[in-house]
Length: 143
Image (cartoon, rainbow, N blue to C red; front, side):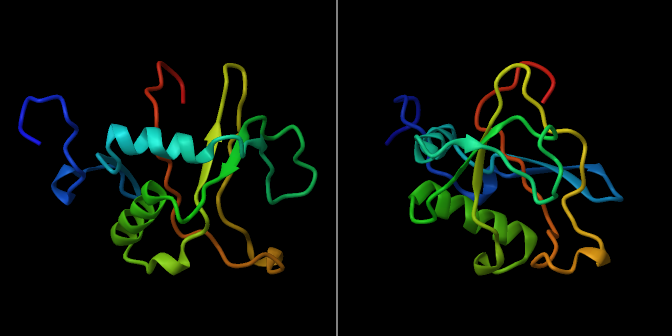
């Protein structure tokens, strides 16, 4: 489709804009990882899969009040996002956790936490080396 006809441009690597927020620990802001149409497709892929969010730690019932949906890996927008994330991290796609869509409504929260486990928690499968938060809709404040 031509320029100016209202059609959305397909995603391409040149759309990525990476900004360093903090050098250590490494925090980056990546803009352009999904197009607006892909964001809507990701939300649609979550569909009616939402359930109360959990945590990996016992005794954390009041720690998180959001809802989470596991995204189907076969959905084209999910597969595309996984591939981009794997490329940015330098890890094979197969090593990524399943992608989740998390929904917060006003008043819901997730208290401060770390996305890794200490040496005493070896019963858990591996550690999370990277965490990606992809905002699919504009956040008016907070977030």
